[in-house]
Amino acid sequence: MLETHGTVLETHVTVLETHSTVLETHVTVLETHSTVLETHSTVLETHSTVLETHVTVLETHSTVLDTHSTVLETHGTVLETHVTVLETHSTVLETHSTVLETHVTVLETHGTVLETHVTVLETHSTVLETHSTVLETHGTVLEKHSTVLETHSTVLETHVTVLETHSTLLETHSTVLETHGTVLETHGMVVMNTLDEIIAALDDDDEDVAEMIVEQGRSHARFSDDFDELTFWVKTVAVNL
Image 1: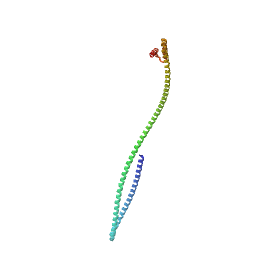
Image 2: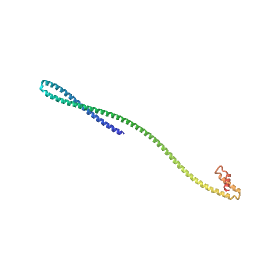
Image 3: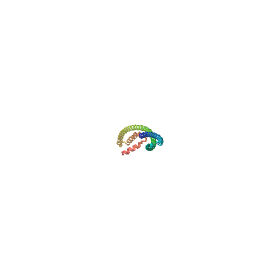
Image 4: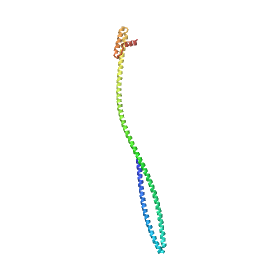
């Protein structure tokens, strides 16, 4: 847009320079016309003197009247020619006046266009300043976003580390649970073998059987503070009946 305005301004300058040259030419022509008019005035004054001389000569020499008449006719033709030239000059001056008025109108239009261009340039300047402020604000926001993203990245890295630690712990817990399962399975087999021995001894001595069951209850009491030997005894008998 600014380049187009520059081109328009250069064109206007060229037109103004051309107008200036035309005006200078018109001034020169007017000066020439003024000189011609002064010359005509001098010629007319000379003619007047000649006419007065002719009158004196006519009064003195009646035979020269015809010659003087011819001279006067010639002078009349010259005067008519001068009048025609003056009328042409007048027309030219009127044309020049119209051209000058047109030039003035064009110059006024150019002035209005230049004022409009100045207003547009000022508006563009304001818009550019606003854009600059917006870009600076965007830069600040982007910097803040960058800081937040860096913080998020650090938090995510911490979360990844925690998840990796949890995964390791879960794997360890899984291994421990598998070990506990094996131990419980083995313990269950031992308990069942003991119960089988107790059941096999039911026919021998009830007191010995009861003592064996209570002993098994005592051996499990360490796994719970509220373990009841009697409950273990009742449940054991109920299961095997």
